[in-house]
Length: 499
Image (cartoon, rainbow, N blue to C red; front, top):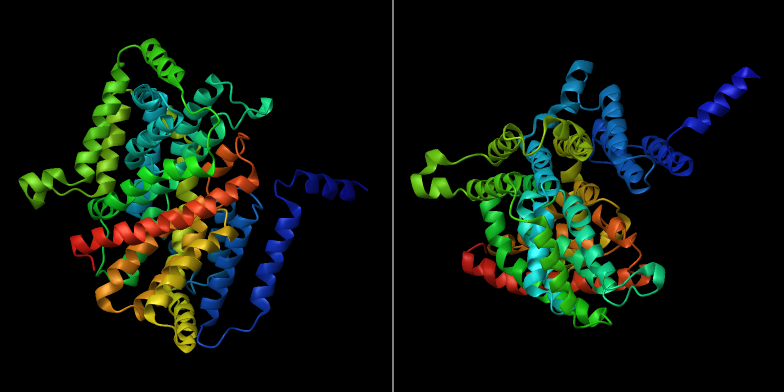
Protein backbone atom coordinates (compact mmCIF):
# COMPACT_ATOMS: atom_id res chain seq x y z
CA UNK A 1 0.00 0.00 0.00
CA UNK A 2 2.83 2.36 0.86
CA UNK A 3 4.53 1.52 -2.42
CA UNK A 4 1.34 2.34 -4.31
CA UNK A 5 1.00 5.63 -2.41
CA UNK A 6 4.59 6.43 -3.20
CA UNK A 7 4.06 6.01 -6.96
CA UNK A 8 0.78 7.96 -6.87
CA UNK A 9 2.47 10.84 -5.05
CA UNK A 10 5.45 10.70 -7.41
CA UNK A 11 3.08 10.84 -10.37
CA UNK A 12 1.33 13.89 -8.92
CA UNK A 13 4.68 15.60 -8.29
CA UNK A 14 5.86 15.10 -11.88
CA UNK A 15 6.31 18.63 -13.32
CA UNK A 16 5.50 17.67 -16.91
CA UNK A 17 2.33 17.55 -18.99
CA UNK A 18 1.39 13.89 -19.11
CA UNK A 19 -0.27 13.56 -22.54
CA UNK A 20 2.43 15.53 -24.45
CA UNK A 21 5.08 13.54 -22.55
CA UNK A 22 3.53 10.25 -23.63
CA UNK A 23 3.27 11.46 -27.23
CA UNK A 24 6.91 12.57 -27.19
CA UNK A 25 8.04 9.21 -25.77
CA UNK A 26 6.00 7.38 -28.41
CA UNK A 27 7.65 9.49 -31.13
CA UNK A 28 11.13 8.59 -29.90
CA UNK A 29 10.38 4.86 -29.53
CA UNK A 30 8.58 4.76 -32.86
CA UNK A 31 11.40 6.45 -34.74
CA UNK A 32 14.02 4.21 -33.17
CA UNK A 33 12.01 1.13 -34.21
CA UNK A 34 11.93 2.24 -37.85
CA UNK A 35 14.73 0.70 -39.97
CA UNK A 36 17.50 3.11 -40.90
CA UNK A 37 16.62 4.74 -44.24
CA UNK A 38 18.88 4.05 -47.18
CA UNK A 39 21.72 6.55 -47.39
CA UNK A 40 21.91 7.18 -43.63
CA UNK A 41 24.16 5.62 -41.00
CA UNK A 42 22.58 4.05 -37.91
CA UNK A 43 24.07 6.81 -35.72
CA UNK A 44 22.75 9.45 -38.11
CA UNK A 45 19.21 8.02 -37.89
CA UNK A 46 19.36 7.80 -34.09
CA UNK A 47 20.60 11.38 -33.89
CA UNK A 48 17.74 12.48 -36.14
CA UNK A 49 15.26 10.58 -33.94
CA UNK A 50 16.57 12.36 -30.83
CA UNK A 51 16.48 15.73 -32.58
CA UNK A 52 12.92 15.29 -33.90
CA UNK A 53 11.75 14.08 -30.49
CA UNK A 54 13.25 17.19 -28.89
CA UNK A 55 11.45 19.41 -31.42
CA UNK A 56 8.15 17.60 -30.70
CA UNK A 57 8.73 18.04 -26.95
CA UNK A 58 9.40 21.76 -27.40
CA UNK A 59 6.38 22.30 -29.66
CA UNK A 60 4.03 20.37 -27.37
CA UNK A 61 5.49 22.11 -24.31
CA UNK A 62 6.03 18.97 -22.26
CA UNK A 63 8.20 21.05 -19.94
CA UNK A 64 10.16 24.31 -20.26
CA UNK A 65 12.43 24.41 -23.30
CA UNK A 66 15.57 24.29 -21.11
CA UNK A 67 14.47 21.01 -19.54
CA UNK A 68 13.74 19.52 -22.96
CA UNK A 69 17.18 20.61 -24.13
CA UNK A 70 18.70 18.98 -21.04
CA UNK A 71 16.79 15.81 -21.92
CA UNK A 72 18.40 15.86 -25.37
CA UNK A 73 21.87 16.38 -23.88
CA UNK A 74 21.40 13.39 -21.57
CA UNK A 75 20.10 11.09 -24.32
CA UNK A 76 22.87 12.03 -26.76
CA UNK A 77 25.54 11.56 -24.08
CA UNK A 78 24.25 8.17 -22.86
CA UNK A 79 23.41 6.76 -26.30
CA UNK A 80 26.90 7.68 -27.62
CA UNK A 81 25.55 8.38 -31.10
CA UNK A 82 28.33 10.91 -31.73
CA UNK A 83 31.23 8.75 -30.48
CA UNK A 84 32.03 5.25 -29.24
CA UNK A 85 33.58 6.70 -26.08
CA UNK A 86 31.44 8.07 -23.25
CA UNK A 87 33.99 10.80 -22.52
CA UNK A 88 34.11 11.86 -26.18
CA UNK A 89 30.29 11.81 -26.34
CA UNK A 90 30.06 14.17 -23.35
CA UNK A 91 32.66 16.41 -24.98
CA UNK A 92 30.51 16.51 -28.13
CA UNK A 93 27.38 17.23 -26.09
CA UNK A 94 28.96 20.21 -24.34
CA UNK A 95 30.96 21.46 -27.33
CA UNK A 96 28.55 24.22 -28.31
CA UNK A 97 28.58 25.73 -24.80
CA UNK A 98 31.88 27.39 -25.73
CA UNK A 99 30.48 28.78 -28.98
CA UNK A 100 31.19 32.57 -29.03
CA UNK A 101 27.95 33.26 -30.89
CA UNK A 102 25.88 31.63 -28.13
CA UNK A 103 27.74 33.65 -25.52
CA UNK A 104 27.12 36.79 -27.57
CA UNK A 105 23.38 36.27 -27.13
CA UNK A 106 23.69 35.37 -23.43
CA UNK A 107 25.82 38.43 -22.65
CA UNK A 108 23.63 40.75 -24.71
CA UNK A 109 20.56 39.56 -22.78
CA UNK A 110 22.41 40.50 -19.60
CA UNK A 111 23.30 43.90 -21.06
CA UNK A 112 19.64 44.52 -21.91
CA UNK A 113 18.94 44.39 -18.16
CA UNK A 114 20.37 47.88 -18.02
CA UNK A 115 17.69 49.25 -20.34
CA UNK A 116 14.96 47.91 -18.09
CA UNK A 117 16.52 48.41 -14.67
CA UNK A 118 17.67 51.99 -15.27
CA UNK A 119 14.32 53.02 -16.82
CA UNK A 120 16.07 54.17 -20.01
CA UNK A 121 13.88 51.91 -22.16
CA UNK A 122 10.68 53.43 -20.78
CA UNK A 123 12.10 56.95 -21.10
CA UNK A 124 12.83 56.34 -24.79
CA UNK A 125 9.27 55.11 -25.34
CA UNK A 126 7.76 58.16 -23.63
CA UNK A 127 10.10 60.43 -25.62
CA UNK A 128 8.86 59.19 -28.98
CA UNK A 129 5.22 59.30 -27.87
CA UNK A 130 5.67 62.89 -26.70
CA UNK A 131 6.84 63.76 -30.23
CA UNK A 132 4.47 61.62 -32.33
CA UNK A 133 1.48 60.93 -30.08
CA UNK A 134 -1.13 63.45 -31.28
CA UNK A 135 -2.76 60.73 -33.36
CA UNK A 136 -3.15 57.03 -32.64
CA UNK A 137 -1.12 56.17 -35.73
CA UNK A 138 1.58 58.51 -34.44
CA UNK A 139 1.71 56.56 -31.18
CA UNK A 140 2.09 53.44 -33.32
CA UNK A 141 5.09 55.00 -35.06
CA UNK A 142 6.49 56.06 -31.69
CA UNK A 143 6.34 52.49 -30.43
CA UNK A 144 7.92 51.30 -33.69
CA UNK A 145 10.81 53.76 -33.48
CA UNK A 146 11.52 52.82 -29.88
CA UNK A 147 11.47 49.12 -30.82
CA UNK A 148 13.96 49.84 -33.62
CA UNK A 149 16.26 51.78 -31.32
CA UNK A 150 16.34 48.99 -28.74
CA UNK A 151 16.71 46.10 -31.21
CA UNK A 152 20.51 46.08 -31.73
CA UNK A 153 21.22 45.56 -28.04
CA UNK A 154 18.25 43.45 -26.93
CA UNK A 155 18.79 39.99 -28.44
CA UNK A 156 15.80 38.66 -26.57
CA UNK A 157 12.94 39.80 -28.78
CA UNK A 158 10.66 38.66 -25.95
CA UNK A 159 12.38 40.98 -23.47
CA UNK A 160 12.20 43.85 -25.96
CA UNK A 161 8.65 43.45 -27.26
CA UNK A 162 7.06 41.87 -24.21
CA UNK A 163 9.16 43.11 -21.30
CA UNK A 164 9.98 46.70 -22.32
CA UNK A 165 7.57 47.81 -25.06
CA UNK A 166 4.35 46.06 -24.03
CA UNK A 167 4.06 47.69 -20.59
CA UNK A 168 4.50 51.07 -22.31
CA UNK A 169 1.79 50.18 -24.84
CA UNK A 170 -0.60 49.00 -22.12
CA UNK A 171 -0.12 52.14 -20.04
CA UNK A 172 -0.99 54.27 -23.07
CA UNK A 173 -4.07 52.21 -23.91
CA UNK A 174 -5.24 52.28 -20.29
CA UNK A 175 -4.75 56.04 -20.24
CA UNK A 176 -7.40 56.27 -22.97
CA UNK A 177 -9.71 53.88 -21.09
CA UNK A 178 -9.12 51.18 -23.71
CA UNK A 179 -9.46 48.03 -21.64
CA UNK A 180 -10.52 44.48 -22.68
CA UNK A 181 -12.22 44.05 -19.31
CA UNK A 182 -14.52 46.96 -20.19
CA UNK A 183 -15.06 45.88 -23.81
CA UNK A 184 -13.29 49.01 -25.04
CA UNK A 185 -10.16 47.33 -26.42
CA UNK A 186 -10.78 48.54 -29.98
CA UNK A 187 -10.68 52.18 -28.87
CA UNK A 188 -6.89 52.28 -29.30
CA UNK A 189 -5.62 49.10 -27.61
CA UNK A 190 -6.16 46.57 -30.40
CA UNK A 191 -4.32 48.73 -32.91
CA UNK A 192 -1.43 49.53 -30.56
CA UNK A 193 -1.09 45.89 -29.43
CA UNK A 194 -0.80 44.73 -33.03
CA UNK A 195 1.76 47.45 -33.83
CA UNK A 196 3.60 46.57 -30.62
CA UNK A 197 3.83 42.98 -31.80
CA UNK A 198 4.44 43.36 -35.53
CA UNK A 199 7.33 45.76 -35.08
CA UNK A 200 9.09 42.94 -33.22
CA UNK A 201 9.64 40.44 -36.08
CA UNK A 202 10.79 43.20 -38.44
CA UNK A 203 13.43 44.56 -36.07
CA UNK A 204 14.42 40.96 -35.28
CA UNK A 205 15.28 40.56 -38.96
CA UNK A 206 17.36 43.74 -39.05
CA UNK A 207 20.22 43.01 -36.65
CA UNK A 208 22.30 39.94 -35.81
CA UNK A 209 21.86 40.76 -32.12
CA UNK A 210 18.10 41.45 -32.27
CA UNK A 211 16.87 37.93 -31.49
CA UNK A 212 18.45 34.77 -30.09
CA UNK A 213 18.23 32.49 -33.18
CA UNK A 214 20.00 34.94 -35.52
CA UNK A 215 23.52 33.64 -34.79
CA UNK A 216 22.20 30.16 -35.64
CA UNK A 217 20.93 31.57 -38.96
CA UNK A 218 24.34 33.16 -39.47
CA UNK A 219 26.14 29.86 -38.90
CA UNK A 220 23.77 27.96 -41.21
CA UNK A 221 24.33 30.48 -44.01
CA UNK A 222 28.09 30.09 -43.63
CA UNK A 223 27.85 26.27 -43.61
CA UNK A 224 25.48 26.07 -46.58
CA UNK A 225 27.70 28.33 -48.69
CA UNK A 226 31.00 26.82 -47.46
CA UNK A 227 31.96 30.24 -46.11
CA UNK A 228 31.30 32.05 -49.40
CA UNK A 229 28.61 34.15 -47.67
CA UNK A 230 29.52 35.30 -44.17
CA UNK A 231 27.14 37.70 -42.47
CA UNK A 232 28.99 39.84 -39.94
CA UNK A 233 27.10 42.18 -37.63
CA UNK A 234 27.77 45.02 -40.08
CA UNK A 235 26.90 43.23 -43.32
CA UNK A 236 23.69 41.82 -41.79
CA UNK A 237 22.59 45.27 -40.59
CA UNK A 238 23.48 46.89 -43.93
CA UNK A 239 21.64 44.26 -45.96
CA UNK A 240 18.46 44.47 -43.88
CA UNK A 241 18.50 48.25 -43.28
CA UNK A 242 16.52 49.51 -46.29
CA UNK A 243 13.91 46.71 -46.56
CA UNK A 244 13.56 46.74 -42.78
CA UNK A 245 12.92 50.47 -42.67
CA UNK A 246 10.43 50.16 -45.54
CA UNK A 247 8.58 47.39 -43.68
CA UNK A 248 8.57 49.40 -40.44
CA UNK A 249 7.18 52.44 -42.29
CA UNK A 250 4.36 50.49 -43.96
CA UNK A 251 3.46 48.18 -41.06
CA UNK A 252 1.55 50.74 -38.89
CA UNK A 253 -0.32 51.92 -42.01
CA UNK A 254 -1.35 48.41 -43.07
CA UNK A 255 -2.48 47.52 -39.54
CA UNK A 256 -4.37 50.85 -39.42
CA UNK A 257 -6.40 49.53 -42.36
CA UNK A 258 -6.78 46.00 -40.95
CA UNK A 259 -7.58 47.03 -37.36
CA UNK A 260 -8.55 50.72 -37.37
CA UNK A 261 -8.71 52.32 -33.91
CA UNK A 262 -12.00 53.88 -32.89
CA UNK A 263 -10.14 56.88 -31.45
CA UNK A 264 -8.07 58.51 -34.18
CA UNK A 265 -6.88 61.67 -32.40
CA UNK A 266 -4.99 61.33 -29.11
CA UNK A 267 -3.58 64.69 -27.97
CA UNK A 268 -3.78 63.46 -24.36
CA UNK A 269 -1.06 60.89 -25.12
CA UNK A 270 1.44 63.71 -25.67
CA UNK A 271 0.49 65.29 -22.35
CA UNK A 272 0.70 61.93 -20.56
CA UNK A 273 4.15 61.20 -22.00
CA UNK A 274 5.43 64.69 -21.20
CA UNK A 275 4.07 64.42 -17.66
CA UNK A 276 5.81 61.10 -17.13
CA UNK A 277 9.06 62.42 -18.59
CA UNK A 278 8.79 65.39 -16.23
CA UNK A 279 8.27 63.05 -13.28
CA UNK A 280 11.31 61.04 -14.36
CA UNK A 281 13.38 64.19 -14.26
CA UNK A 282 16.76 64.50 -15.92
CA UNK A 283 18.80 61.47 -16.92
CA UNK A 284 20.15 59.62 -13.91
CA UNK A 285 23.81 58.65 -13.69
CA UNK A 286 22.91 55.02 -14.41
CA UNK A 287 20.88 56.03 -17.46
CA UNK A 288 23.79 58.11 -18.79
CA UNK A 289 26.18 55.19 -18.35
CA UNK A 290 23.69 52.85 -20.02
CA UNK A 291 23.24 55.27 -22.92
CA UNK A 292 27.00 55.68 -23.30
CA UNK A 293 27.49 51.90 -23.24
CA UNK A 294 24.67 51.55 -25.78
CA UNK A 295 26.43 53.95 -28.18
CA UNK A 296 29.83 52.34 -27.58
CA UNK A 297 28.47 48.86 -28.38
CA UNK A 298 26.88 50.07 -31.60
CA UNK A 299 30.11 51.75 -32.73
CA UNK A 300 32.23 48.70 -31.94
CA UNK A 301 29.76 46.18 -33.40
CA UNK A 302 29.68 48.31 -36.56
CA UNK A 303 33.52 48.12 -36.71
CA UNK A 304 33.87 51.92 -36.79
CA UNK A 305 37.34 51.87 -35.11
CA UNK A 306 38.58 49.39 -37.72
CA UNK A 307 37.25 51.62 -40.50
CA UNK A 308 39.05 54.64 -39.05
CA UNK A 309 42.29 53.16 -37.66
CA UNK A 310 42.75 49.97 -39.66
CA UNK A 311 42.02 46.23 -39.39
CA UNK A 312 44.11 45.79 -36.22
CA UNK A 313 41.23 47.47 -34.34
CA UNK A 314 38.69 44.93 -35.58
CA UNK A 315 36.96 43.32 -32.58
CA UNK A 316 34.94 40.12 -32.33
CA UNK A 317 31.26 40.89 -31.47
CA UNK A 318 31.40 38.63 -28.41
CA UNK A 319 34.48 40.47 -27.10
CA UNK A 320 32.56 43.73 -27.54
CA UNK A 321 29.59 42.31 -25.64
CA UNK A 322 31.89 41.21 -22.79
CA UNK A 323 33.29 44.73 -22.62
CA UNK A 324 29.79 46.23 -22.46
CA UNK A 325 28.72 43.87 -19.67
CA UNK A 326 31.89 44.57 -17.69
CA UNK A 327 31.33 48.33 -17.95
CA UNK A 328 27.76 48.03 -16.66
CA UNK A 329 28.77 45.77 -13.76
CA UNK A 330 31.92 47.66 -12.74
CA UNK A 331 30.03 50.97 -12.71
CA UNK A 332 27.16 49.52 -10.68
CA UNK A 333 24.63 50.18 -13.45
CA UNK A 334 23.59 46.56 -13.02
CA UNK A 335 24.69 44.39 -10.12
CA UNK A 336 26.33 40.97 -10.17
CA UNK A 337 23.21 39.66 -8.46
CA UNK A 338 21.22 41.00 -11.44
CA UNK A 339 23.52 39.00 -13.73
CA UNK A 340 23.20 35.84 -11.65
CA UNK A 341 19.44 36.24 -11.35
CA UNK A 342 18.71 36.77 -15.06
CA UNK A 343 17.25 33.31 -15.64
CA UNK A 344 16.47 33.88 -19.33
CA UNK A 345 20.17 34.32 -20.16
CA UNK A 346 21.27 31.08 -18.50
CA UNK A 347 18.21 29.27 -19.81
CA UNK A 348 19.21 30.41 -23.32
CA UNK A 349 22.73 29.06 -22.83
CA UNK A 350 21.32 25.56 -22.16
CA UNK A 351 18.55 25.25 -24.73
CA UNK A 352 20.23 27.23 -27.47
CA UNK A 353 23.51 25.36 -26.94
CA UNK A 354 21.72 22.00 -27.09
CA UNK A 355 19.93 22.81 -30.33
CA UNK A 356 23.12 24.15 -31.92
CA UNK A 357 24.98 21.00 -30.85
CA UNK A 358 22.35 18.70 -32.35
CA UNK A 359 22.25 20.69 -35.58
CA UNK A 360 26.05 20.42 -35.85
CA UNK A 361 25.97 16.68 -35.18
CA UNK A 362 23.23 16.14 -37.76
CA UNK A 363 25.47 17.87 -40.25
CA UNK A 364 28.54 15.83 -39.25
CA UNK A 365 26.62 12.56 -39.45
CA UNK A 366 25.38 13.34 -42.95
CA UNK A 367 21.69 13.75 -42.08
CA UNK A 368 21.36 17.29 -43.48
CA UNK A 369 22.96 16.36 -46.80
CA UNK A 370 20.75 13.23 -47.01
CA UNK A 371 17.54 15.17 -46.37
CA UNK A 372 18.61 17.98 -48.70
CA UNK A 373 19.25 15.51 -51.50
CA UNK A 374 15.79 13.96 -51.04
CA UNK A 375 14.16 17.38 -51.21
CA UNK A 376 16.28 18.44 -54.16
CA UNK A 377 15.37 15.28 -56.09
CA UNK A 378 11.68 15.86 -55.37
CA UNK A 379 11.79 19.43 -56.70
CA UNK A 380 13.88 18.48 -59.74
CA UNK A 381 11.54 15.62 -60.61
CA UNK A 382 8.59 18.04 -60.50
CA UNK A 383 10.12 19.96 -63.39
CA UNK A 384 9.48 23.41 -61.91
CA UNK A 385 11.88 26.23 -62.92
CA UNK A 386 14.42 27.40 -60.36
CA UNK A 387 12.50 30.65 -59.74
CA UNK A 388 9.41 28.70 -58.70
CA UNK A 389 11.52 26.29 -56.66
CA UNK A 390 13.12 29.19 -54.74
CA UNK A 391 9.69 30.74 -54.11
CA UNK A 392 8.29 27.42 -52.88
CA UNK A 393 11.24 26.91 -50.53
CA UNK A 394 10.89 30.38 -48.98
CA UNK A 395 7.09 30.10 -48.59
CA UNK A 396 7.12 26.55 -47.23
CA UNK A 397 9.88 27.44 -44.77
CA UNK A 398 7.97 30.54 -43.61
CA UNK A 399 4.43 29.15 -43.42
CA UNK A 400 5.53 25.93 -41.74
CA UNK A 401 5.97 28.07 -38.64
CA UNK A 402 2.30 27.40 -37.95
CA UNK A 403 3.58 24.08 -36.59
CA UNK A 404 6.18 25.65 -34.29
CA UNK A 405 6.06 27.53 -31.00
CA UNK A 406 9.76 28.37 -31.14
CA UNK A 407 11.67 30.17 -33.88
CA UNK A 408 14.88 28.49 -32.71
CA UNK A 409 13.32 25.02 -32.97
CA UNK A 410 12.00 25.83 -36.45
CA UNK A 411 15.32 27.21 -37.67
CA UNK A 412 17.23 24.29 -36.15
CA UNK A 413 14.91 21.76 -37.78
CA UNK A 414 14.61 23.16 -41.29
CA UNK A 415 16.79 26.09 -42.30
CA UNK A 416 20.09 24.40 -43.15
CA UNK A 417 18.35 21.79 -45.29
CA UNK A 418 16.28 24.42 -47.14
CA UNK A 419 19.36 26.58 -47.73
CA UNK A 420 21.31 23.59 -49.03
CA UNK A 421 18.55 22.59 -51.45
CA UNK A 422 18.02 26.15 -52.64
CA UNK A 423 21.70 26.73 -53.31
CA UNK A 424 21.82 23.50 -55.33
CA UNK A 425 18.93 24.69 -57.53
CA UNK A 426 19.40 28.46 -57.78
CA UNK A 427 22.02 29.67 -60.29
CA UNK A 428 25.12 31.22 -58.69
CA UNK A 429 24.36 34.85 -59.70
CA UNK A 430 21.04 34.73 -57.79
CA UNK A 431 22.10 32.78 -54.71
CA UNK A 432 22.69 35.93 -52.65
CA UNK A 433 19.07 36.98 -53.21
CA UNK A 434 17.76 33.57 -52.14
CA UNK A 435 19.95 33.40 -49.03
CA UNK A 436 18.96 36.89 -47.84
CA UNK A 437 15.26 36.13 -48.38
CA UNK A 438 15.65 33.03 -46.22
CA UNK A 439 17.40 35.12 -43.56
CA UNK A 440 14.54 37.64 -43.59
CA UNK A 441 11.92 34.86 -43.55
CA UNK A 442 13.48 33.34 -40.42
CA UNK A 443 12.22 36.38 -38.48
CA UNK A 444 9.15 37.37 -40.52
CA UNK A 445 7.57 33.98 -39.81
CA UNK A 446 7.04 35.18 -36.22
CA UNK A 447 4.10 37.31 -37.46
CA UNK A 448 1.80 34.31 -38.00
CA UNK A 449 0.38 33.02 -34.72
CA UNK A 450 -0.23 33.90 -31.08
CA UNK A 451 2.35 31.27 -30.08
CA UNK A 452 4.97 32.00 -32.74
CA UNK A 453 7.60 33.35 -30.35
CA UNK A 454 7.94 34.38 -26.72
CA UNK A 455 6.61 37.88 -27.36
CA UNK A 456 3.30 36.77 -28.87
CA UNK A 457 1.70 35.05 -25.86
CA UNK A 458 2.57 38.07 -23.69
CA UNK A 459 0.81 40.55 -25.98
CA UNK A 460 -1.99 38.16 -26.96
CA UNK A 461 -2.57 37.34 -23.30
CA UNK A 462 -3.34 40.98 -22.53
CA UNK A 463 -6.68 40.43 -24.32
CA UNK A 464 -6.61 43.30 -26.81
CA UNK A 465 -6.70 41.04 -29.90
CA UNK A 466 -8.89 37.98 -30.53
CA UNK A 467 -7.26 34.82 -31.86
CA UNK A 468 -9.03 35.04 -35.23
CA UNK A 469 -8.03 38.67 -35.67
CA UNK A 470 -4.46 37.88 -34.64
CA UNK A 471 -4.13 35.05 -37.18
CA UNK A 472 -5.77 37.06 -39.97
CA UNK A 473 -3.59 40.13 -39.49
CA UNK A 474 -0.58 37.86 -38.99
CA UNK A 475 -0.97 36.12 -42.34
CA UNK A 476 -1.50 39.40 -44.21
CA UNK A 477 1.50 41.04 -42.55
CA UNK A 478 3.67 37.97 -43.21
CA UNK A 479 2.92 38.06 -46.94
CA UNK A 480 3.23 41.86 -47.13
CA UNK A 481 6.60 41.82 -45.38
CA UNK A 482 7.92 38.99 -47.55
CA UNK A 483 6.89 41.04 -50.60
CA UNK A 484 8.61 44.16 -49.22
CA UNK A 485 11.84 42.27 -48.57
CA UNK A 486 11.66 40.60 -52.00
CA UNK A 487 11.07 43.86 -53.92
CA UNK A 488 12.71 46.62 -51.87
CA UNK A 489 15.30 44.26 -50.44
CA UNK A 490 15.98 42.70 -53.82
CA UNK A 491 16.72 46.11 -55.37
CA UNK A 492 18.84 47.15 -52.39
CA UNK A 493 20.82 43.91 -52.41
CA UNK A 494 21.37 44.32 -56.15
CA UNK A 495 22.74 47.81 -55.55
CA UNK A 496 25.06 46.40 -52.87
CA UNK A 497 26.27 43.73 -55.30
CA UNK A 498 24.99 40.80 -53.25
CA UNK A 499 23.49 39.20 -56.37
